[in-house]
Length: 99
Image (cartoon, rainbow, N blue to C red; front, side):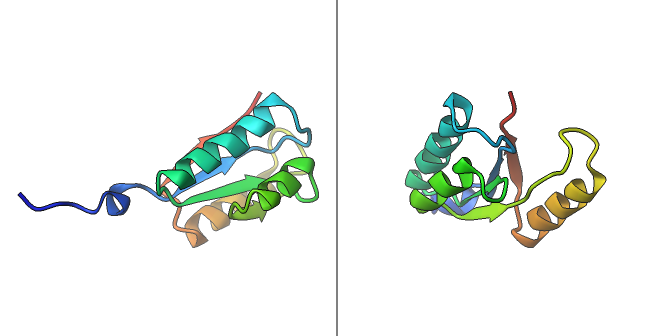
């Protein structure tokens, strides 16, 4: 039987959290991304620009992309930007972290 490179089978993943706080939800985002990276999963963390979460993700040496929606719901411009990021980064799996 031929051995298969497991990293080729894993999907490129994005973790999206638009919270501007730095509590349990946001810290879980960082922990999940770190655990996935440790397992060899290519991850991108998409967070608000200039947020505590962005700073923590950068400090954790994660691949970070900043995107700041203007509204919590119905922000078409942010949706288009997010779609472009997902396409450009060749993301196959999105994990949305929302309270």
